[in-house]
Length: 351
Image (cartoon, rainbow, N blue to C red; front, side):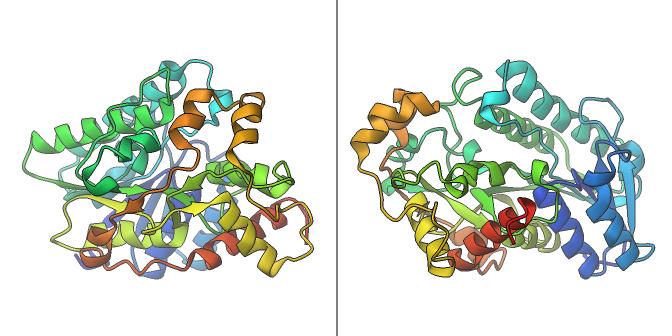
């Protein structure tokens, strides 16, 4: 698929992943269309406006609402590839009603994009941004997998609207997209399933859901020690590259886990940051034993159930499909964590 023929559409172009993807596509010579929720939101759209100046005539912005039928048709017209990146992301404490706040928008949004593709004969490929959360719900689930290794073969069956609505929403949306693909012959879908996405942000602070997850660490809530929680991690720049490879490589198919082979703990992140910022006094020096986390966790909004299914659990990730089929070379976690921390410092005026 030559970059010059037919445009590509990125939904959610102003988000953390979307803005990096738009930038890489422009750097590779694509004609890019991007949708945002509101062109009137100057702060959110500013990074994309800057790209329009840098790459004259190659980036067109459209307003589209995930919940509005037909909202993506205009932006999609004539495109060969659709990258469906847009997804409602709420911090768990902001979710009042899992079905209404998370599941409906994710599912309705995906169905609206799929309906747009059905009406747009030029589309040949959909690259769907999912998450590892559509593969497993709790870390404990991975212990049931073959060799206790996370692989693309599984679907999350443990999350529900009540328990982990974000992962449930992404699972339901990804399944709906596969069902739509199976029902026709014209276009092919490839899904990418990233872990916790970290790295430098082009988007304003409020847009980067993952920046908040580490906010507690950076602000010093864990001053006395880092709790033994680990994450599957991936650099946002690697995620952007993987989306493009999933579109360009004719043989790309199915789902691709995007994450390092080994997980990264809060303590690992602290060690990396302290190595560069030894005077970052609030970053914990030590790992916390499990018992204070079990005792105090509920005071920080962690249920005993969550603690039991995540604390101290690490597993290996089989990312071989992304390496061999998409050609991804994962950045070292040190670079990712430091770039992530530096973005956070800039956004909080700590130069």
